[in-house]
Length: 265
Ligand SMILES: CC(C)(COP(=O)(O)OP(=O)(O)OC[C@H]1O[C@@H](n2cnc3c(N)ncnc32)[C@H](O)[C@@H]1O)[C@@H](O)C(=O)NCCC(=O)NCCS
Ligand SMILES: Nc1ncnc2c1ncn2[C@@H]1O[C@H](COP(=O)(O)OP(=O)(O)OP(=O)(O)O)[C@@H](O)[C@H]1O
Image (cartoon, rainbow, N blue to C red):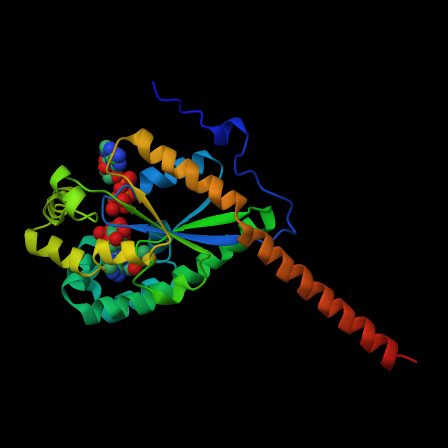
């Protein structure tokens, strides 16, 4: 039987907040459609890690009381509204996934608001003293502006067939397509358009610092997450950031003392 209580847990290394004045770092997590992101994120949450979900925020910022809602209705028209007045996500999805310029437009409306809300949540976790925050962002590698703020990037991938897993460790496009069609009730062309709107998984694999292979069973995935969490907790980056912060504070303090001594009577 596999021992689910790993060394990591025995050492009691859960992600409890550390005192608030310690600096933290960001970890970007992404993956293909139905690759297992939620599964991986659930393990991180179970370990007490701070997780921010971009898809959840993307839904919040387009609620009727927000500016993004008005802008979307202004540019896309009332046709994308449900009777309740809320955005018809299926209708909007059908438009933006088949028209790249409209997708660009929607992104330009929503992404700044999503990023602003993420920033607020990051600040909250900073104040609470977390060592690192996981940002679950489906478009992490497509949106270059975000990756530069990540100390680590993680890609979750899942090979759906044995044959593919050995030759091409990225995805099985056919199975991914079928899953998407079934899950979202999409026609083949619509599902293809959705997949084509994102970077191919094997491209993302090359860009990521860490890859979690979710092709095996749950335990195998869980073990990889525990190992990664342990690495992140022990990360020297954390110490480096603290060192830089302490140096900066000392530098500013020194400067203030110098100025006070020279310019005050
Ligand atoms: C187009 C919308 C209305 C479709 O809604 P729907 O409920 O059908 O899908 P949902 O929001 O759950 O997204 C499902 C997946 O689609 C992909 N996706 C969503 N938006 C985009 C986009 N602009 N470009 C490429 N892929 C996207 C992601 O993989 C995401 O996980 C919605 O996705 C949206 O508002 N997108 C713009 C905001 C965005 O970029 N969200 C992604 C997180 S940053
Ligand atoms: N290792 C695994 N073994 C068996 N089933 C799995 C495994 N990982 C995930 N699944 C199943 O595959 C489906 C997709 O997983 P999950 O929801 O975690 O993916 P996701 O990447 O978050 O999907 P989405 O694209 O909707 O965000 C779920 O039904 C989940 O239960």
